[in-house]
Image 1 (cartoon, rainbow, N blue to C red):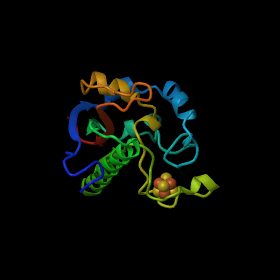
Image 2 (cartoon, rainbow, N blue to C red):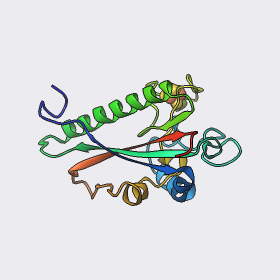
Image 3 (cartoon, rainbow, N blue to C red):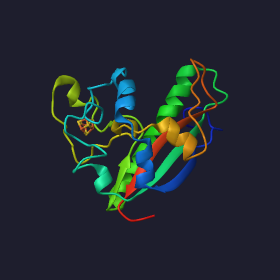
Length: 187
Ligand code: SF4
């Protein structure tokens, strides 16, 4: 039995491959950074902004210089039928952990790829940035699309033909777990 009951199906994957140049149409670090600043995790995890010279999409060391093709993905978790909100949230987080774990494995098995996970890096708990410590495993650290300034709500609508469904405090029918695979080979 999994969180959410024995009947619950795993999240449904929707994905599309696009050139990296198309992904950059959704790069708006100033605008997205405003949302990040209002997050309680802002500055408390080395995978979250401000990156202080760490990973970026643009610039000489940026990911956009190294990769050519992008797989934009969302795993849609079924959130219907829950009577307990905490149980629903636990189900969503278990789905997100599985998606991220699978993605890390994929990256490890596919040289020439980089992956952007959903949410913040959770290799260490808590991340030592909270107490002023350095990243313990820089080689394992993964970033989220939004932490790099990507407008994921627009990616969902314009690339994957779906949408974020949060409206107020109501639990939506599905929750999106948005991730990205960057490849160095052309589409
Ligand atoms: S690897 Fe550990 S220290 Fe580094 S960002 Fe991830 S959680 Fe933080």
